[in-house]
Length: 90
Length: 90
Length: 136
Length: 136
Image (cartoon, rainbow over all chains, first blue to last red; front, side, top):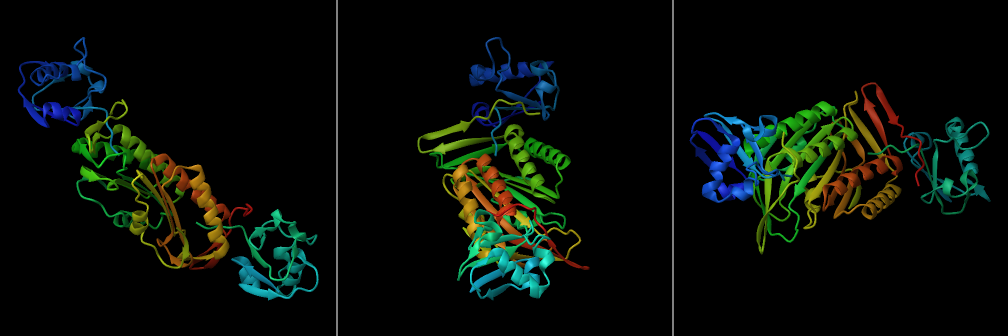
């Protein structure tokens, strides 16, 4: 199972935390595509070509996917995926 | 009478506060020359040519003598003259 | 100390901890809720990662500047106008390092630490969007 | 508030006064006695002129930067290592002004305000000489 945590605007769309069962080999963009459908959130997260929108930050186990394999980063059982908008603390 | 206030190193030489009676027309450098003699402080305050050493700050009624007439600034009865080394607060 | 908490903090206590024989300067940044026609603010954090990133920022600052201490405390939850949001306390032998480190921490915090604010006003609420920088 | 006093000050109280609906940032500079092989320090002021000059510096800062408050308190008398020397508290809508104003005040204070320090060590004592700038 993959633990998905969503924050700020995205928490209000997906809920704070959800578990997603892996269905064979899954990438970050697969996960997001699957998540968006039931929440009608496709336009918020994904662009027209099915890629991830720029203002959507994704961490896998605390590492930004840009330092991994981007949208194609592969997920394994037990991974924690975080989805959040640009940060604004302080 | 002129009120003379000395601070820091110069307080230890001249004392904290003293009154000096005016003896006719007096300038800042006259006052200092007169003050230095009894305190053996000539070398601390005045240079070889009888001018005021650079690191000696003199205020007359709160105004630096450099914005008045320097060592030749004339003093009047009731003036407050302050003598102090470069400041070092904070 | 790096801390994310719902509780308010005591500034005197935090500064007291920064006292160190080699410290001559303590610079403190306090962020408070400003009344931009709002009644308050909700602050949310990805706490685990926020603490990790704050720790990284602290380590960078300790590495770059000559400091005797560096502490950060950031609140989450619902806050009213004038409530404390965060406190950064930098102790240093000399003031320049304390100022520069304190500014470094708040600048980096705003760009890198996964926290978000929702402004609450009479008319409703809105998420404050950060600038579009990547978190590392 | 501009104050020169022998008493210690309460930082929390001073910061509390800086709370203002338009303030989003409060930057505080605390100077403390650093252990440079000393046991303490004696601070002397030309109090009347020091308050006047601090007032000028505050007015300059209020003029140059967008601030909601600016307070300075400086102690005189005999202080031990780690004792508070002075506190500057700058409140502002935005942090940049608060930081810049706070640094402005301490930089100018050190050059212009007629105050002096005598370091007290086991071997005796010595006056700390300031840089040779004119007071205005």
